[in-house]
Amino acid sequence: MQRFRDLVAASLEQIEELFPWDLEDRLGEEPELLLLDVREPYEFDAMHIAGALNVPRGILETACEYGFEETVPRLVDARDRDVIVICRSGNRSALAAAVMKQMGYRNPISLKTGMRGWSDSEMPMVDAHGQRVDQDDADSFFEPRVRAEQLAPEDRTSR
Image (tube, rainbow, N blue to C red; front, side, top):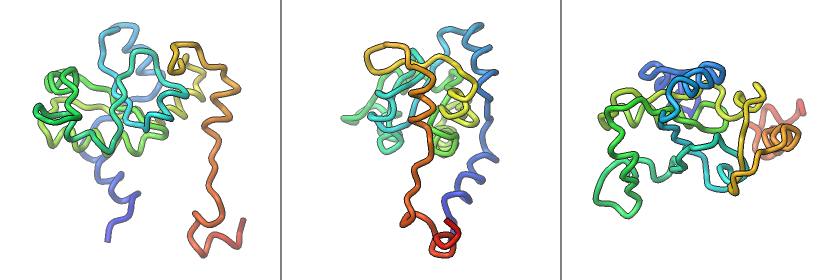
């Protein structure tokens, strides 16, 4: 049986990753670079990198193909472009980038450390209204919130 971390590790063997500061440099050189944020809409609306396209991980495969209710033409037509895939921490984006590679995308690249790393590097973020997000609000948003019942039984006693 493979666990989540095993799936992520296998995905990382198939794809390239990019650190937030390297993405900042690339955006300076290639402002038209396609940023694909695969987080849930509530996460994206709270804060994201300006210009990013939000396609939640749950509908990614159908968003990448014509003929579906979820089809996103801009994404379908990006198969021959570099696509930077973004999530909260770099795990969902690694999985998504690996799937995109299997679907024929030339170079999907996962943002290593995700939006947490982008925020930790104090890079600019905007909310659903295009307003700049305050760094303190971002820090609070990305604070881990794992409840006791979400921990493995053997880890609950140490908390």
